[in-house]
Structure formats: C-alpha cells, structure tokens
Length: 229
Image 1 (cartoon, one colour):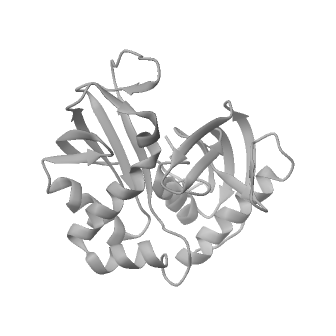
Image 2: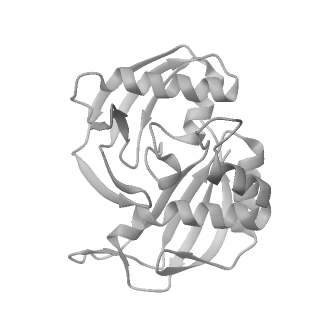
Image 3: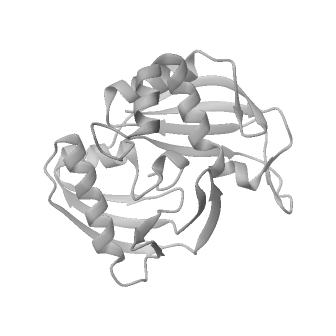
C-alpha cells in the first residue's frame, strides 16, 4: 500500500542534509506513536528476523518552489509519499500521518493538509517498467555502484530477491537497466549515500512487482532512496 501526504512548508527553505537525512527519523516517529513494538523491532533489528525494513518514502517535493543556492526551497504546495508491502507497517504509517496536523522534517515544520491512498498499477503480466523518483542506492563490498558499473544489475537482482525472501514471495527476478540519471550524493542519518535515478524493466511474479512498487528499489529505502514513481 502506498499513500500521498499533501503538506505545506512553514519555512521558506530546508537544509539539503535534511532532505534524506531526516526521513528515517520521521518514519520511526510516526511508527512509535501508533505501534511502539513495531517501531522498536524495525529500528533495532529489522523485519521478521532480517536486517531489512520493508518500507519506502519519498522526501518532500515542493511545487512552484524557486531555486535558492545551497538550500532546498519549499512552498505551500508540497507532497510526501510513503508505502510498504507489509499491511501492519503501511497501516501504522497511514494512521500516523492521518492523525497529526504537523510534522517536523528535520528542522522544517510541515503542515499536513491531507492524506490519500495511491492506486497500484496492474502488474499481472509479470513485467513492469519502474522509474525512480530518487536515486537508487546499491553497494557491493562497501562500494557504491552506479548503473554503468559492472555488476550493478546483478546486485539489484540480489537485493530484489532478498526482499522477496523476506516477504515469502517467489524470488525469480530479471532486471534490465533502460536509462540512468546523473550520480548524486546525499547525506543521510547513517552517512553519505551515492546513487542515481534509474528506469528499469523487471520480470517477476506480479506479487513481487507489487511489493517492490510499494517498497522501492535498492538499499536505504527508509531514508528516501529508490522510490518508484
């Protein structure tokens, strides 16, 4: 399940390190209010005995914001997207945002103007083209990989299969990188993350495609990376 939160920034700008750096804290704060046991489990160990956290978030996107050097400009027309393939997690996030009038994204207060569910595409064919709205983070042996690097597609397949195993879904996946954006580096709660936005074609069980659409691609999805448009 995925949903969109319409927000209005109560400050004219956001510090760039907060864009992805604050995402994890916002998510855990919302979960803590609704389901403390779930928040603790995800924070301390991960989901279902693994290190993975099956949830995704797209950091705030502001329409009509004038660019300002060195800062992330905001406006009163913003939106945040969240999702999870696990009903308990998605439900807690939805209730958390639906039950508050304001949320702080790092140092920036955001007024919550409304919450609405997002309909999922039809993945019954077993094939989908996913284009990400934020960089996909992929690592191998402590090195960040970019789409042009050798082994990138293989590591993305490995990550997707790991997610399938955690969710108890068929794990056969094929990935073809169709195009990629520029290298981007962001500061997150756990250090720097390097990646690039991508468009990929995936062949997988429709249930896994649904799950990846809700969860995101690659690593650090709870920090706002790998969100699928």
